Figure 1 (tube, chains in turn orange, blue):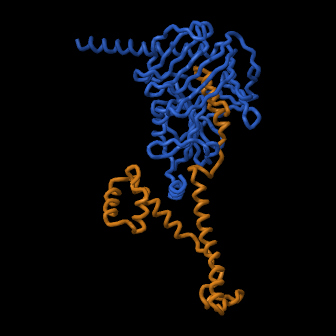
Figure 2 (spheres, chains in turn cyan, orange):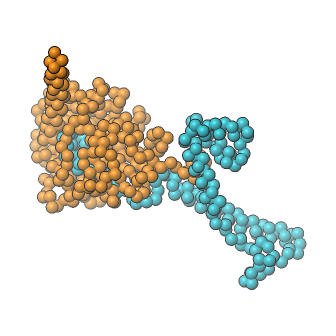
Length: 152
Length: 313
């Protein structure tokens, strides 16, 4: 547990990989911790979202009956060596699909990693200008107060 | 007898209240005089954060005819009478004005200590201290001859120095103003008031004095307690972090904000479920914490963010 919360144990719990002792501890903790209950909901929702990602279409037909008129039928390998070659050609396709899925997740993570990316741009200069004007009309120490809005 | 006791209590309340009012009036007199002082000089401003971070700047300042100019790094800013001209780092200058604002007043959480004589930069001066719950929060030294603010110190809740602004060079008298006088009002963008707020009337001892239309469909709510102040810009839509991308993280109640520390102010940004917020002001850290606690909290980072951070820190 990190900082009194369940942390990675939640993931194990959802995967059904927690031991019985851990499960009991987790359930007991969830009963009294709103933070971890929220984390559990988020984790479950994310898993659901990942599962709902569209499947990438296979490069080649997987079953003999699914060959289309446009695609040539895949002949059985004439030799073991040919079979090994065809498997090594097929692996990059699966690898590409997995990498693409990981890239989607990574981009999605990058997109929100900084907790604010996406959305209208902040016009910081104008915000600070407006703050300076309003600050300046109150009695105070203008040479000090307006320093706070000097453009860095 | 009971009536006499009651009358005595009422009279005492007037005396105490009167004393507090007199102190606020005295403070206001010093602050108004500081605004009208004519001088030029160089000022150092340093803000410390949590003992291990600081932002500092050195500025050329000049003040006359109710206008104050501050210059540093080739950029300058001039304010006075509700008008402002400011150079922007990206180029160009803004001309902005406000024509309506609420009257100033001092929060009753502050006490103003008795003024004391002092010497500063070889000149006769007066020290004025503002206390909150008996702890000094602001200490100012004013030049007796001109009323100019020679030194200003802000303290955090523990009495530790949070910000210092000190004139290190001081020339009393009418200075030349490189930017000239302010122009007529029609040369300025007049910031309109806004009736749309969605923000509380008060936040942890600060009251909402004014509300204006801000840039990019935001609303600017100006909060003050008479000593410190901040503007809170609120947008109904999500804002990109922009300049806050590289800002420090500010953790509060398990949520994360983005913070930028400037020599004279702190800026904070966050996206909440009810809108996006940018706060800019000179309030000390403990006040800032209380204000943030009273506002909608940042969105919880989703599981992708947590996974990313778990992998890469």
